[in-house]
Amino acid sequence: MKTTLAAALEQRGYSTLTPVQQAVTDPALTGADMLVSAQTGSGKTLGFGLAIAPTLLGEAETFGPAGTPLALVIAPTRELALQVRRELTWLFAQAGAVLASCVGGMDMRDERRALERGTHIVVATPGRLRDHIMRGSIDMGDLRAVVLDEADEMLDLGFREDLEFILGEAPEDRQTLLFSATVPKAIASLAQNYQRDAVRVATKSETSQHADIDYRAMPVAERDSENAIINVLRYFEAANAIVFCNTRAAVNRLTTRLSNRGFSVVALSGELSQSERSHALQAMRDGRARVCVATDVAARGIDLPNLDLVVHAELPSGHETLLHRSGRTGRAGRKGVSALIVTPKSRKKAQRLLKFGKLKADWGPAPSADQVRAQDQARMLADPEWEAEISGSDSATVAALVDRFTPEQLAAGYLRAFHARHSAPEELSSPDAPPKARAPFGPSVWFSLEGGRAANGDPRRLLPMLCRAGDLTREDIGAIRIRQDVSLFEVRDSRVAGFLNTVGPDMTLEGGAALVQLDKPPETEARPARPHKPKPGAKPRGEADYHSKSGAAAKAKPRVRKTPDPAPEDTPRHTVKPARRRPEGKPKGPPPPVGKPNSKKNQARARAAAAAKTAARKGKGGAGFPKRKKG
Image (cartoon, rainbow, N blue to C red; front, side):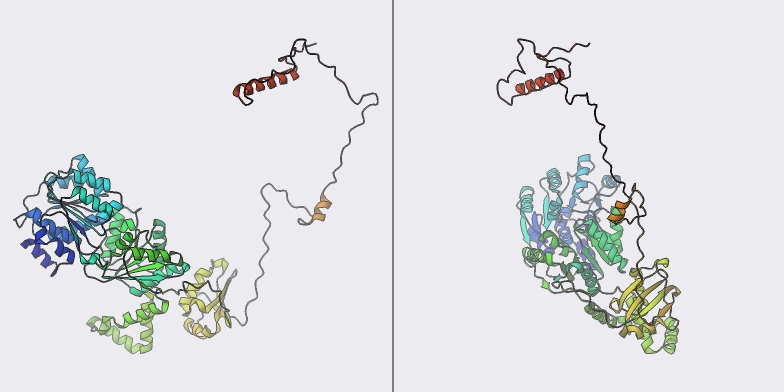
């Protein structure tokens, strides 16, 4: 290994290489074409950087002046291409390498100027690179190495034609490396056509997919799928987590739900611009966001250093996609969790995906609300801040708190602050149980709260307000009735004392709304009759009952049938018209049809005969009848 590369690895803290890195840097494979299959996150980027180094540098330790590119690295997505460039930049920094990128979504003029200034290594996406080749803005005559990273993903995304065009334009004496998580027939065909005696490199991790990832299949009820996602995120509290959905609409819906529940969340989908996607990923890297909800296309190839959890909100269509999704975690020796949310309808699909992917998953229910609370307590008590020394600036405040409040009050205040920073977990039902009818509420006490329909009172707003202000759960509150000026609600009898103690003696809630305890349940308010709205154009109702047939009949006028006036006695009942004579020698009626009964010629004859007959009947003459003379 070159001294400059060894120094870069040491500076980055690399003491040992991963299996795939050791395999591709074998001295026996120097300069050889390779078809490498290794799981996502096994260190492939650093591996092919070390593999092409002898081809690019030769016997030298550093690169010469930058000119036409010496190496070309092709990646399926913009995010992965930029990530590869960052990795190769620090690897070849001490060797004096100049790198450029050609990716979609960036300014093509800036890329063209960078290529004109000179570069040693170009990292590109297939479509943009083909544009540069066709425009003549990149010269590939001096290429020594070509790397196809995530080759199977590029074929899945429809880049086969672009890849064949690019490889056809590259010099034939190049070194070609194909890296792929899986090796289907399409990849094998590509290697056979564009590589020379390629060496097949398969690391041990290929036989045991994703050994550093803990797969968990969680059966949940159909109505609890999103609630289960909330509990999974809360249970693991990962520094970074990705939630995968199949559609943009699902991404938008789930992002809104998680944001409303207090999660710091960003979205990644194909409808976002490159700038928006870059900002979302940067928010995940610097800690401003902890959850990313994404589609498969948007999340291909992204690398987040602290990604410990992958949640499959919707199952993918194939096991290869499941491997790619899960490969976002468990990278470079880190442990990760891949959680599959499995509804009753998708259970067989989940079993099929795991079987085809040769994956073993632990089947078990999603974390319950009690399990999440227990995990919260364990993390809270294990927080190293408890053992930290009190700084000088805080000592006075700490002493004042200890003097003023009891230990129980301090603990309660800390707990309230802790719960305010974390979203409450959701109660999950059994995935196989039918929907349960609500049990009888039992003994209760009714309360009246100032503000009703006139103040935009709404049960959806009142319920969480009562839970916060009175230290109640939704199960402790029964019926809620919104009236014009007040809102009425009932509280379980066993929780009334605690509710009143939390509210305090002033009996006011948020906004100063007055609270009154009622002596008895309120009477049911009669629902006002709906005003009648006549249909457009309808006549107004009369005095008679609208629904009464007798009333309608009473208002209706009797129908009187008019009889015609009698005809004079000298008028005959029938008048006989004189018969019209046909001239001699004229046949009676149209000529008989000749030929087939339904031929076009016979149909035309029949229409002509009918027209002549009609004209003759009107006295305008016709075939076989003389024209009637006027006068």
